[in-house]
Length: 288
Ligand code: 3HC
Image 1 (tube, rainbow, N blue to C red):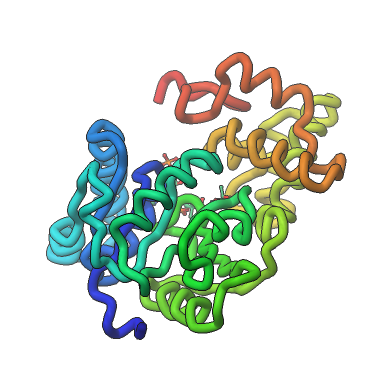
Image 2 (image 1 turned 90 degrees about the horizontal axis):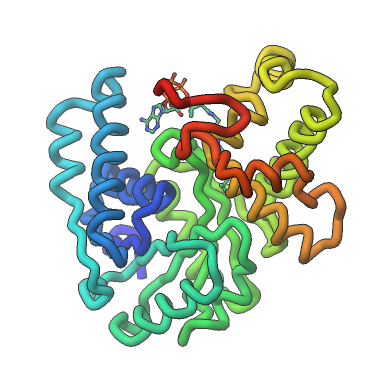
């Protein structure tokens, strides 16, 4: 299969990462068929996509015609069968082996032999997931970053059974949708999260130890190191539960204390302080 022959892509999962992938692919000119279990999730995703496009319009990065054309290329269904015949499918459903297993079973029942599956997982092993599908040679990791329409990077992670043609196609796909890719081994965290997760958890440890306030920790890293967001601000942005969940998975796998979520973070999850999405995290967003 050649990237030039691909005009339609599928995206399974319309959460924040899935919605970002849908938008990015639609802006790159692909027809995008989206599948999620719920119309409610899709309504939220469409709002996210529209808001993101409007911000780009305001910043004069795109025209009104670009925005309308991108939205017109997107279609949604709750039925996996609508992806029959689609040659390239991004998977961005909930980070659970069970949920992914069920989805790939359904996809394998309707998709052709040549279909490529690109999973956006950040915490599950690519080789392990590839073992769930009929053709693991066509299975690869494509890890995007939040917010997907703004972040330029995609990590490309071949599994043990992934063939070179699949990797080449994933690299070509990343380029076609305007991303820069790096290729890395199938190890926990790949490159970015391997470095980012201990850094973010260390920031929580500093706060827990009373070394500095949340605002001062964030200011230190923004002004001292040129980070666009401080480590605590970033956790509120992505959802404190995400770093907690991912840290736990990496810790279970590597038994490296740097990945063990600190008690403060655990208590925040229990208290429902999940960051921006719940109105409270390291900061208060109740007035926004
Ligand atoms: N689409 C979506 N979100 C947008 C957007 C667009 N077109 N334009 C801006 N944003 C978001 C910002 O996050 C922020 O939200 P807010 O208004 O509600 O506070 C706001 O819009 C900021 O907009 P600005 O125009 O002021 O900001 P910039 O455009 O200068 O930069 C940014 C925004 C690119 C998100 C920058 O802050 C940044 O790079 N932050 C760091 C993000 C990061 O590190 N991401 C990686 C997370 S780790 C990950 O994803 C791994 C995975 O496994 C979970």
